[in-house]
Amino acid sequence: MKTSNARAKWTGNLQAGRGRVALGSGAFAGDYSFTSRFEQGAGTNPEELIAAAHAGCFSMALAHGLTSAGYEPKEINTTAKVRIENTDGAFVIPWIELETEGRVPGIDETEFRQQAETAKNGCPVSKALAGPEIRLTAIRLSDA
Image: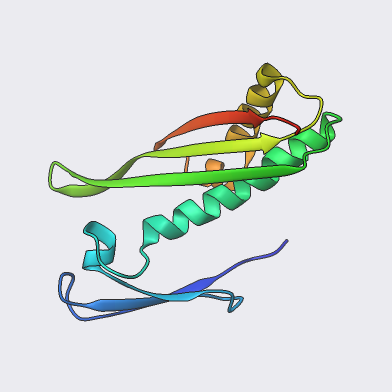
């Protein structure tokens, strides 16, 4: 199976230093810093990259589950929110929240939510991140 990779380089101390991350595929490279991670500075951060990976994986898993159940998804939009906070002097990720909307003809709200829950539990990134609570909001959009 495929192995994906990324690189990160950090220069300097935690608060004044700067870093750069790059995907092995070359599809993305970006700067990160203490302020982009813990405050409101420019650049990306590890939690944002986790969120991107989780949103992408979940959307694919949901599309697969829906197709396997006989539905033809037209569109799935997922936002992942990854929270980092200082708890008892240590930084932790206490929760991840997934919000997904899908345009899926012929499916009702209950079935869509069940499919979304199955995707949340089954996507490889969800499994890799099983430590924090992963919250999910699933909304079926109208076919129109």
